[in-house]
Image (cartoon, rainbow, N blue to C red; front, side, top):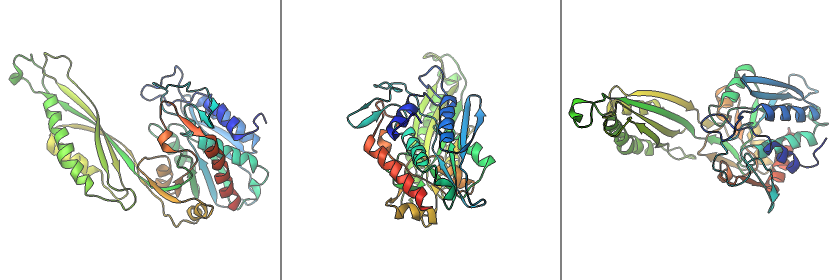
Length: 367
């Protein structure tokens, strides 16, 4: 065993680039392969039977199954994600893992290599006792959470369980409900002509202007009237727009990316109905992540609360909803604070990291 502390383990994880390749990753070789292989090796040291499962080329999940003296017992899955967001624009060495001022710095230190290191360290400390626990323990390191959730979606197609504890920086609060996402890519079409005679063409940007007015003046107020007792109201935001090819050509296309955050029980398809009324013929494609609404009275949720945690909701989404949608009750919890996730100088406090180990260990010992 080459590590003597959870901070040393986290340093090693941060120093392995595992940037999600979507968008502009900021590294030459993005992907989770190296991180998955490292985690696989550590899980073997903890006594797990380990399997690396490729989801897409160079981008695997890693699964660790721990021995159990009670075959057929209920299964608890510890499930952090392996990937991080882009390192573009960071003001520190994203893979340095430097320790100073009581903090560990680097991309993923908070989201979610910090929670993952705390989970792994708690498993290492309990490695001789895990077989005697009242539940079967699995560890699932998941790829692709930061864009698409492909890892979690692949996992639940192949496996099942009775409870999933997803590693996220929640200050060790138990996030049992969170918002979902309903991302829309909109495209309006026009007819290009010389801009000196715009009446002979059809301006796609003007069509999209009608869509923007609809979002601001109709959809946003409608969403504001829908209120969840913990999460508040759904939100909508126009985030990215592009149209036309040249100043002196009437644009024949315009594209708009829209971010909607949904609440449990909401039917987001009503948004599409608004948009089609605003601009007949508009093209709409959707990517959706479900909201989470796990029963807070679930015995293992209550076990986390009895161990000193508190229940919470969150405006972001994570892999917990993928598990829940597949019939596996799930919550998100772990050390670190979400305000430090994705930042230009990401860090986690060492004191919080240590508390995370205690948090996960207490939960496992109580099973």
